[in-house]
Image 1 (tube, one colour):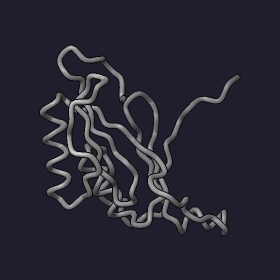
Image 2 (cartoon, rainbow, N blue to C red):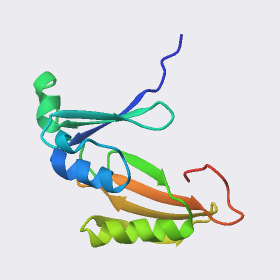
Image 3 (tube, rainbow, N blue to C red):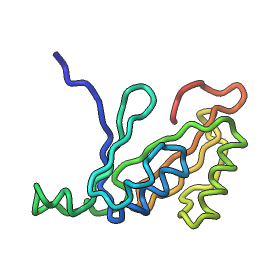
Length: 138
């Protein structure tokens, strides 16, 4: 039997800051999770997302160091429509998060933008443009 994709794991420097960012994107993260060393929540469709502090990872892998040279992972969040991409990007950047790529109409038929989470990972915001592809994340 083949392995089944089940969980997306992120290593974070500041659990509270990371969870605050993902709550703004609509993930249902318990408010009392900010001080925990490991947090996971279910996602629609049966997947899970988890956050571990650097200290947690080093507790079982003492030599672990963060990868160098930019973002380590990129997550994509589908928005309700093209205008919602602009709105979500604006809300996140006004809240102090770093905008990496302002909203634009991508050649693949989507309104697209990229914001960085507190650990520098890219978080894409996208929605199909009228007449664009359905369900693709670019």
